[in-house]
Amino acid sequence: MSTNDKKGQSGGGQLELFWAILPKVPLIIKVVLLHLLKRSESAQYLDLRSDVTISVIRSMLDPAKPRAVSEVQAMTLRDPGVKGKMWVSTAASKVPPEHGIRDALLAAVAGLSGPGQEDAAPTFRIPDIVPVEAEWTGFRAAATKDSTPPAISEEEKYHELMKECTNATTILYFHGGAYYLCDPATHRPLVKTLAKLTGGRAYSVRYRLAPQHPFPAALLDALVSYFTLLYPPPGSVHDAVSPADIVVAGDSAGGNLSLALLQILLELRRQNRKVTWFGEEREVPLPAGVAPISPWIDMLQSMPSWIRNGKWCYLPSPRLLSKKEEHQPPADDLWPANPPRKHVYIDDAYMLHPLASLQLNKSWEDAPPVYLCCGWECLQDEDRYLVSQLTRDGVTVVFEEYQAMPHVFAALMPGIAESRRCIDGLTNFIKAACEDPKTIQPSYKMIKAKTLEEVDIDVDSLTPFTEEQARDMAHQMLSGQKAPMPDVASKL
Image 1 (cartoon, rainbow, N blue to C red):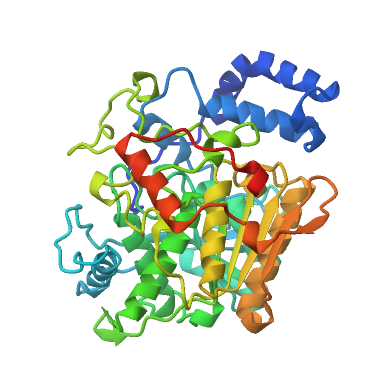
Image 2: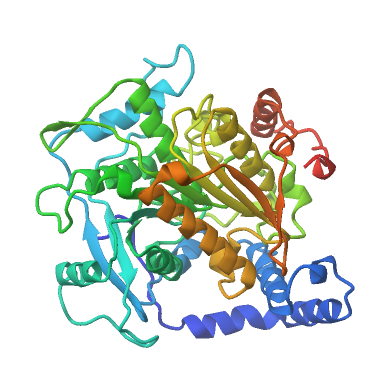
């Protein structure tokens, strides 16, 4: 059974899409004309189809009248079914007989809470340990684009998938969706491509979603999934996976989750803590690498690029903490939360916690190699800031910034040259991390639109913000006293 709540059905999806696009026809005509006449700035960098796609999605994500949270969530949980050149085998982690995995998470949350908070009792709702569903995903070479799965068991599908793997590479993948939207089903095409190009397989996790399951439920599901790979519970279809064969990846909120999992592992190792898991005291090893795509670092959306880069991105302007009536979705059984909170994902008292707003972490020392990509998107400043933190702490970083590209563009527009280049960079990193991480060299590149020319980025110019400034911006946004943010484009 899925760990998420009810899923919608896929019927009527095309008709709904038609009615959603129809009101956008005037916008489409405007974008097309401006593009053809070279009157829009985006026309310098984007092809016509990409320009229209981004403009329409931006319009759809910023409606005049917001929809209820339950309605929007249900739309993104519709499973269209498995089709094409992919194997998908659904599995679920077993629930251990003891609470060691949850105790370890709580210890990490406490340890990262700051001086004097290590022994404080958590005020958030402590999540239950539940079976965490995931999709083993791999490439199915002999299938056609219209092929459907054979009528065999999930275990048999897994073994068929494994026959096509050419190496032991295992991608632990967390989908994006602001922690309250989407599902492994929405990300199957991307995850299948990663499995195909690496020659390995992916374990795409159906973690619990907010607002029903706020922080740190998704973190617990991520930690359970990682331990399920390392130390398979009785009855699992897979053999134990070496940490040297695991790369943790994810996009957007899934990128946040992948980095938060890394920070949990680092903190447990700082505490010299082992985890009781199915009757055994288990070590806490690090994965071979971490590869976030356009990761959402700052839960408070406090950095200037959220405003400055709106013309390149489709994400709405910052409104997660907005009190304006026009930004509030109609009340339903999911939102507002009970007890009330400001943020859909996290309780008010934990919005500045380093496992939520990752830019507030004190150290990433001893982390494995990290690949991080982004575009000229709303998250650009926070992604660059994190890259500077990782570099400061001696982490090997491969950073790629794509000129004029929006948030998670490689999944949104997979056919364009920039997306293919991004996926190549990501999968080359994954292969190197699993084969020989010592071969990975630090790299900081800006990839130009259309030509794909690579330009070195000066590491010292990654961010204009000091730790104190980053912390102050987050505190000011939380308090509602946010001062106008400076335009720092010329400094980047």
